[in-house]
Length: 622
Image 1 (cartoon, one colour):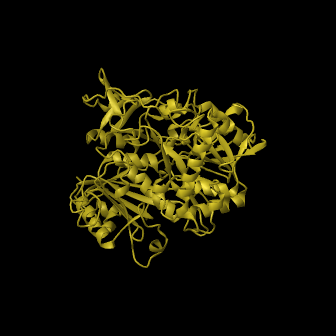
Image 2 (cartoon, one colour; image 1 turned 60 degrees about the vertical axis):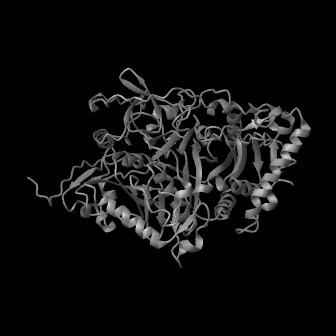
Image 3 (cartoon, one colour; image 1 turned 135 degrees about the vertical axis):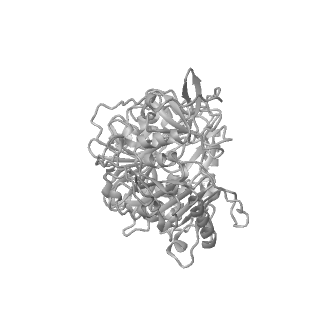
């Protein structure tokens, strides 16, 4: 019999395949972007049957290639038991010494077993395999007003962080009190889930990250989303660059005394290399928290590297493309191309070697998901994927996901490891981008379906980050609303937006990248009058950019915005290319274009005179 001090280790180390990226198949025909994102509501089941025995769980692989990077090959698991369990893993350095059992980097099957044993959620009978599903309570999205960064006096972060509504400052004393609260909570637990992983596919800029969680499903989420260690040696004597202690079951009762905004707190201390999370179960806080840190670390590196909220793919000849865009603009759909490999779908870096993915998985929205419109995401929902806040309908003894029922939230999600996509690009890295595409959903209907930007215009539109909040992206949004989000990801920027723009400008100039603005929104009139661009039209514009046809076109200059509009493109109605021609009421078009141009100018006032270069003159004519 083992003594209480004995260390029980259960592990089976198998080398994981190469770092991975994605290649996804074509999106089958869908009439328009409006229909693609339209909300269709249905009844949501309220009664859930008992979870079936694990032996009944289905697992269906759709891949015909050898899976060197698979659920079977990811196996660096160890379960450590005894009074010295925390010390043996290294979390005693955090002050956590209470748990006598540590579950360290569990395999996918072990995570599934733990989730069921702990009754942490339900099993959804997805078409391609039984999938674990969780409900995160009232928080079905990030809580941006509860995100804080410690303002440590006389430090590099104090000097460089763009303090304000996005990066709210709090004091070291508040952090220390919250940190002690989190540690004390874990010291009351008999067990803890520890996950050691990596962020950034390029080893030259990769960061080591440690997560401390209460529940198996939370480790499951980060296992899906971050780069998993390939062997036990990768995490032997692991010294993290940053640690997140997630005490999500605990609330900050004295939040008013601490100067916080609610009982929820997501607090980062850059100098102490630690963050704590309280009061929110939403999995995305883990993912986007580290992304915000990458947005601090990479531009501060020597030489500076650009962090980006974008998707990326690469062609057969090695040509790389970046797709910037907010929710509802088609970033995920358009970067899925049958002739190109998808490097990643959300977060990337651009360094001296080229473009690389930050992540090891995908976190896709499930609203109105179908195999016809999003085949690769739909088929990726199988065993080892995890659904969040997705409605389930009772069908006999099964609970079937209903992606059209958004009564819980329009932000239902699925996380899955990147190898759930067939024919993925294994390197997760590629060369410097040939084309950079800014996607916008213009609710006013005055931007062309595609336009070529000068280098200065590219920086102006990158900083502006214009799109519209369309129905389905946020609760309460039932029609498009104009929205400017700097660098197409203002909520995650640690530094001032012009810092990223200056880096992008420098890299584009060095590597000869071209920039394009693609409107997936309305044409022929504003929302309610005009029509949403068809997916076929947008896809033809993207294809023309990527195959060089657009660059070889003849152009006319847009009078209001100054960018160049192609006269003709294969597969695109020439009547649509110049937006004024698509409007029956030309005077109304001129009036609306002037209105939107004024909104751009007004928004950009706060960036005038800031940064290495003032890009104001590259905006619209007002």
